[in-house]
Each structure stands twice: as structure tokens, then as C-alpha cells.
Image (tube, rainbow, N blue to C red; front, side, top):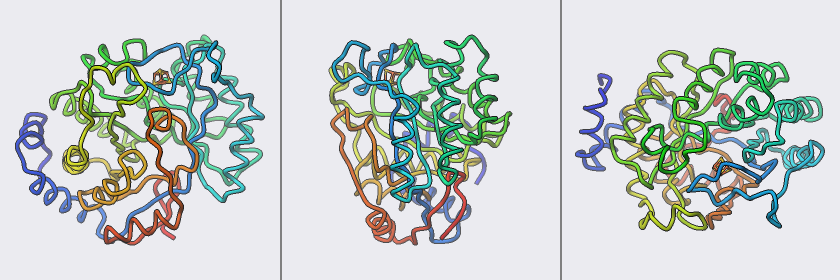
Length: 344
Ligand code: SF4
């Protein structure tokens, strides 16, 4: 299949039936991943602070410093989270936090360094692009220098959070004070140049149009062509509860919208190896269904999580249940690491 241009992409995304998209996506998935296997990782998503000065309209997680339930953990407290992950037999910790004015690059580096020293079997999948850019700013250094310090401390992958929709129009409406779409792309590009691998995400289902989605995916595809640094694409839907944007967005994105995005991204992002389905973000039945619409990865076990929970979206599972869900979709589960390799 030839590479779709953005205008061909819009036409396919808006006009094709879900069944047509599914057939195309399954064919691409089959050629990229002929084994009937779906990967997953044993992970957890703790946070080091919920204090954030940014105030994105879609966020239910953020607290002001004076709020009764605001927190900012010391490195020792974060290591308690990592210790629990280690004791539970997990392999990856996805650690993120709000944009806190006191969080410097020294603090972030310290969390990586301690994790690598104290728990060498744990992979630190730490800090989204906005956090890294903000810590660089508060520390008076460049993003490249901040990334290099994290790399030198032993970090090798960066999660793709904070992208939302990579369109200036959407950014202005839902997160004008946060890192811009170009800024997000620049952090990932610089990270790839240093040697990091990263993931790419998309939060849809709010004020975006089909054109915005195509712009987002086109930007990812162009950067991937230049660097080959993205490991996977992970879309999830916006959750309306407990955040200001929910007053204006009257409908929650449907499971069908999710499957359309999974299938379309499988086809459009032809230079991405992995498309990740989210049992966690979308619910178990939509997560299972996504594996039949082109996704080849099932994400993590997510033992601890607070961001979706703050928006009233609570979903838990066990490793055995993850494996059972993958088998229910007709695939063999295979545990992976944070580079999406390994099949046990
Ligand atoms: S999404 Fe992130 S940057 Fe935006 S308000 Fe929430 S914690 Fe802060």
C-alpha cells in the first residue's frame, strides 16, 4: 500500500466505513507482525507531584500548592514507589508529574540516578516532554542539556504524554500555557538525536476536527521519517469528569471512534512499528476489540495510576487478566520490555 498523503488521509478517515478501515489495518498489521502475538509490559504509573502551575482545561489531576491534597514527593518517597514496583515483580515505572516551579533538572536526574542504582532491574520510563522542557526552563539550561543529563544518568526512554493534539488551534483552546505542539516535537526530536527512544500519544474526543487529527499524525510521521525514534503510537480519549473542559464538551468519544482511530493510525503511520491499544484508558472491551483493528500491543498492567482516576475513570487488572484479554482477542500474549522487544 502506498503512503497516504494528508488529503488522502482525511478522505479515508472521514469516508471509509469502520469495516473498510479494519480490513486495511489488519492487512498492515499482518505484514508488520505476522506472528499472532500481542505484547504487554509489567508496569506502574506513579506521580512525583500533582502541583502544577499550568492549568490545562482538560486536566482533573492538577492541584494548586495550597490545596489540601497537593503533594510533592521527596526522592526517598519516589523510591518507595519504585521499591513497591520492584517487589511486585514489575519491569517498568512510568513516572510523571505536574509542572512544579521547584522541580529542577537536578531533582529529575536524582530520581533516575537513584532508580538505576537501587533498582537496576527497573526501567525508568520517566517524564513527558512538557516536564523536561519546564525543568530545563526552571534550571536555566537548554532542553538538549536537560535531556543529555537524564541520558547520562541512565534514562533511555521517554513517555509520549503531553501531546494532546499537535495543532496550534487546539493547543490554544485546551492548553495555551503548556508546551506548544512544535515544542513537543522539538523535545522528542532532540531526545531521538541524543539516543532516547520515545512513544507518541494522542488525546482525542474534545474540540479537535478530523483535520487536526491528520495534522497530528502527519507531524508524527514526518519526525519518525527523520529520526526513527518513536517506538509506538498510543491514542486515548478525553475524559470529561472533574475538569473545566467537560462543561463544553457534551459527548464522550464512543468505542467506535476509538476503533476508527486505532485502525486509521495503523494505516496512516506506516513508519511506526507498534500501535498500542489501551484496555486502561478505553475500558477492557474496547481494548480487546482494538487488537482486531490493527493494534499489536496492549500497553502495561498499570498497577498504580492517578491521572485518569482523578477524572473518575478507574480501571484495574492483573497480569493474568491481561493475558486472558489478549487471548480473548485471538492472540498469544508476549511480555515485552520498554523498547517493545522480548517475547516470553
Ligand atoms: S495536564 Fe499536566 S501540565 Fe496540564 S494542568 Fe494537568 S498536570 Fe499540569
